[in-house]
Every structure is written in structure tokens, then in C-alpha cells.
Length: 84
Length: 417
Ligand SMILES: Cc1cc2nc3c(=O)[nH]c(=O)nc-3n(C[C@H](O)[C@H](O)[C@H](O)COP(=O)(O)OP(=O)(O)OC[C@H]3O[C@@H](n4cnc5c(N)ncnc54)[C@H](O)[C@@H]3O)c2cc1C
Ligand SMILES: [Zn+2]
Image 1 (cartoon, each protein chain N blue to C red):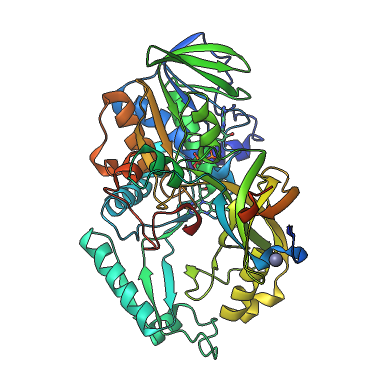
Image 2 (image 1 turned 135 degrees about the horizontal axis):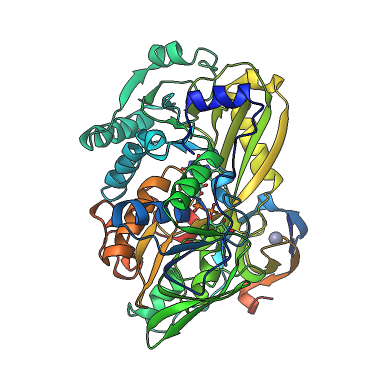
């Protein structure tokens, strides 16, 4: 698998670190259902998914849109800009 | 038909014409007391123990493909009881004891081979960690022997002991560890469950779970609706999809784990061996193939096939530890869908829906768990309370933070196990 970094181009998977599903952080700092959900529970889709990858060489967090069944990669955008 | 040596001789002399199909292929009935979703190792074992331990036989196992076509038939078959943390420790200890009586109990040759497992260490710190693990195993009543370098050499003379970066300092030897024949475990449980009256329904995909007033009432399938008083989700890598049919969102992420096998060779590796400085473990199948694997590819996937970086890592580790393996040709590689939990330990529990039970989160280690998981889930479903050997496998432990079982000590976070 290769992932398209907006800064560096299409790069080998070895250059990336996987973080997991790209989810919105809960607003409240207090522990509760929202944090449990954010940290643990997952849709875990068989199909299109959005997940967070870190591109080690340039230090950018990316939101990658890809297919978990075919491994096709549809796109990637910096998480700081809201992602793909 | 009971299997025995005599039976094989008789069949050999009469042209093998007397073998009959091993289980029925029934159409689903309109209703059952208990429906089990998933005909893998865990689902089939659950059905067997429901019948055998609890006398419950109005039970169906619904399998979307064929029996044993999932992970139970594509794993590297290591069976061991060398877990460290309370919760896991007693559970896997119980499982190994069930394995040890399994062939007689099922009247089926599951080829359980206690050839011994050796986890190698390559540094002082790693040695300390294995001493601690070995003591935990002994405290649990299982077997562990600390080997020094010469001790390892006596068992495994073919390893590269003097590798400049990763010299072998010793190993933790678990003599009762070993392997079993993956398909045979599924078939043995299937045959034994069928003989006790359980319906094993293949090509029957569950497409919906019916819930009325907070209580499960049945399932929708590609072969029609089936009513049930109780339903157990035992779908391994597909647990999230099946649970979602009942509106549940699980602490599970599905990942790919790869494995490899070489062409058949004469007997050369008579243990299970794991490298301590990279992801590589190996054993030799009875057919002669060297079966080996590594770690997850480390991203969510349902592809049941992996990527080259992990292939490269595993091959490098293999060559580092056992340079002779470079002469063998790899025949095949494949991948399976692993149901990973945040702490890397499983879940056997009730759900918020009455009559709906969950058995999942087996990660990359669920083959050895097949007997004890079936045993514990059958107990939970039949009696509505957990069996003591699996009481720690709670679904709510991530929410409450109590009773997390993180064997690797890296944190209860999805991308770390
Ligand atoms: C490469 C590899 C190596 C491994 N090595 C080891 C090892 O050495 N030791 C070890 O202990 N473990 C190992 N494992 C892990 C082990 O194989 C799994 O944890 C275990 O098999 C999972 O439980 P199961 O047998 O019930 O799963 P499966 O056999 O996958 O059973 C689940 C079944 O549910 C069915 N299903 C799914 N959805 C539906 C639906 N909607 N309707 C009906 N049926 C459905 C599937 O078709 C499948 O047959 C390995 C796994 C892999 C992939
Ligand atoms: Zn980049």
C-alpha cells in the first residue's frame, strides 16, 4: 500500500504510522460516555473508512480515506485542515 | 460412527466404502432455543458444550460460508498457556487442560502435539521479563522452565546463537505448549455437536438481529427468518458488523495478520520457536511445511491479505534467527481478519440486550482459546452468569477502566496491540 502525502507525494506505507479511526474529540474534558466512545468503540467499517496516519518524514498528520476491503486509497489531506 | 484404529483397518480392507458424511446438512428450522452466529472454532465449541455440559440441543450454528472457513482454518495453530495477567492466566490454563483431553472426548484426531514452545530472549532485561512470566505460569499450575544458552542449544542447535546484534541468551521453555491441526478442531467439534443434535446450518448468513422491547427474539438470514430465545454473536473478525445489526458499537477494530508456509521438508523443527527481537515464530506442520508468522500489518483491514513490509520484516527476522531457512522456498502466504480489542484481550459477556451474548476480541490468539471459550460461553448462555474461568472478560472494562488485561503493557489503546 502507498499513501498520498499532500506535501511529499505518493509514498511507501513504511513511512507512515497508523493511529486509527479519524474521530472528533469530545468537547468536555470530563470522563464519560463520549470519551469511552472516542477512545474505545469503533464503527470498524468493512468498506470506506477515514483514518489518521502520521507521515514520519514530514511530520504531518493525515486523514486518509480508503477501503478496508480492497485496500484502495481514495485520498489524503492534512488533519489540521479538517482532513479529506 | 465411532472412529478407531480398527475402523481404519477395516475400511482399508473394504475399499473405504463405509465412510459416511460426518455431519448432517440440515435446513434451518423456524425456531430454536439458542442460535449461534458463526461456525468457526468458538461457535462450534460453544454448540458442543451447550449440548454436552448443559443438555441444550435445540441449538443452531449459522455459518455464512462453510464450517471452519474463517480464521479457525487459517491460523498458525499455536496452543499454549503462557499468559501472565490474572484473568488471562486462569482462562488459558483451563483451555490447555481441555485441549489435553480433547481427542478422547471428541473421538476425533485433532493432532494436538505438545512438542514444547520456546520463547527466546536476547538481553538481560528480556530475561528478567521471561523469568517473571515463567513464575506466573508456575503459580498458575502450568509448566515453565528457564533455559540458558546451552539449554537452548540442546533443543535448537540450528539457530544462529552468535548473531552479532541479537545473540541468543536463553529461552523460556513451555513443554506443554505446541500445535494442533486447525481444520480438525473445527471438524471435531462440529461432528460432536451434530451427533448431539445441534443443527449446523451452512451458507446461511445472518443479515439482521431482531430485538423487541430490549430482548432478542431471533435473526434474519439469507435462508429466512429464524426465531430464537437466545442469540450468541461469535463472528470473530466480523463481530462489529454482526453486533451493529443489534445497534451495538464494539470496542473492536479488525486488522490483518499474515502467515506463511514453505514447501514440505523432512523433519527439522520439532518445537514451536519464537524470536525475541523481531516478529517471527515458527513450527513445522505434520506435512512438513515450515509454518511461520509475525505481527499485524497494523492498520484496520478486512482484505484477508497483507502488505509487503510485514512480509519483509518476517523474512528478515527468520534469516537472522535461522539462516538455514533461506534454502526453503515459501509456498504460500495468506492473511486473516483479527478482531482486536484496545487491551488485546477477549470479551465473553452479556450485552445490554437481554438474551444477546457476545464472544469476540480474540485478536491473534484465539485458536488456543477455542475449547475454553466454547466452554465459558456455553455456561454464560445456559446459566446467564459467567463461568469463573472467563469472568474477567467483561465488555465494560474499557469504560470503567477496571480489569484491563494488557499483556504487552503498552496501554489499552487500539493501535498498540
Ligand atoms: C494468520 C493467523 C495466525 C494465527 N495464529 C494463531 C495461533 O498460532 N494461535 C492462536 O491461538 N490463534 C491464532 N490466530 C487467531 C485465531 O485463528 C482466531 O482468534 C480464532 O480462530 C477466531 O475464532 P473463530 O475460530 O471462531 O473464528 P472464525 O473461524 O473466523 O469464525 C467466525 C465465523 O463467523 C462467520 N460469520 C461472520 N459473519 C457472519 C454472519 N453475518 N452470519 C453467519 N456467519 C458469519 C464467519 O464466516 C466465520 O466462519 C491466528 C489467526 C491468523 C489469521
Ligand atoms: Zn509527507
